[in-house]
Image: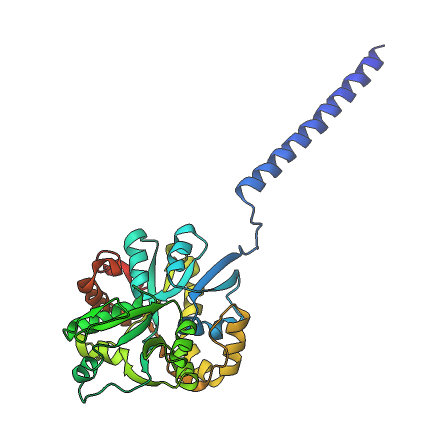
Length: 353
């Protein structure tokens, strides 16, 4: 009898021991799953979403997309959107980590959210006025005055091309109004959303003058019987005295999460690709068109070396571009504070890492 009891006790002890080991292992596994999903020796993978408006800013990404050699641990997605205003929304809701956009929009995003920094500028001015007829006169003032009584179309009311042209007209004390029937003493302003909308109007003689960005400028001159009558960048530099600073039309914005030392390889890789892009893109225009079209561009088919060169793509780090960007933002602030987010961005806007 005693022997039977001993056997039963031994069996119970064994069962309890097995159960205890199972519970401990389960708890350890649960604890490891919750607090340390990354196993030793593994590299965490980050998905980076880059967004850019269609047109010349998108071309800046061509080599990056083509090479497809992001640093280990990063998967990069690219999205081309129709307008730059969508970019602010994507940064705010977290669906974009990195953006190329008009510099004043990036300033507005920074002033409103401090969510990231300007890492550099990529488009140094790609805006031009085309016309069916050359403005009369010898000087810039005479030529602009000859547009009084006429209508100039622009892409995007309140966007960079519109703000820049209005600033130039104010500097020359030229009256303008948002009208299709200007008086003989003012320039009328009308708007479309894209160059693709404006080129048919020029071709059909429903518009005489229009401000466009490359490569739409070259497309208009080839297909709509226009010629380039003003270099908007040159006019800007003339009225602001910023010849040595250029026209920092669009820049690269990176959210704070990826501006730490842990992600230096990512930021350095992006800067290197943007720096190499201009020469590569000009040498491979057909490939650039193929890449851009495959990624959703509606305006970048049929690119040529000349069209890409006219986009003035050039990478300048934030540290080097700071004076020019500050001059640009200060001028727009003086014109309308809301165009840059209510104030000229402080030093925290510029990435110096």
